[in-house]
Image: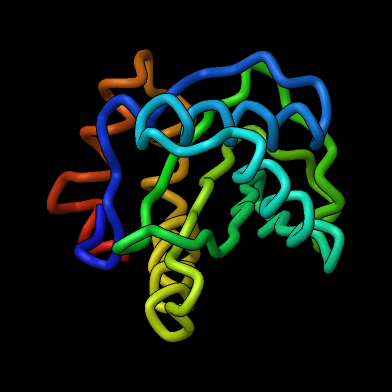
Length: 153
């Protein structure tokens, strides 16, 4: 993915979320399981950020993000949804791919650089199509961490 943040292979998953709230819960649970964080703390931070405005990036992608005390560097989780979910995105399209990003609470520039890297990657139509067509979470991880994925970012 990017040297700007960490993506553990286990942080890539598929989910059956039916709403924006369920997407945030699924991301919080994935962060808790993979990165040994408190799910309630993560969920509260993601929900607080979402109240400021939708993190629906557009083009079927959301990038829920927050800052969490105690982290050493930005970390990422990716959730592919089995069915698109309304996310109040700027383009009005529902979301079927959510990138969760958590950064240390004092990481202003690092957080913004990580968000920018994910958004640049998701503007690559070819990569976005390949992610949508991927048959497994392992394939999604490989696409996001391959040279072509890094070039897109």
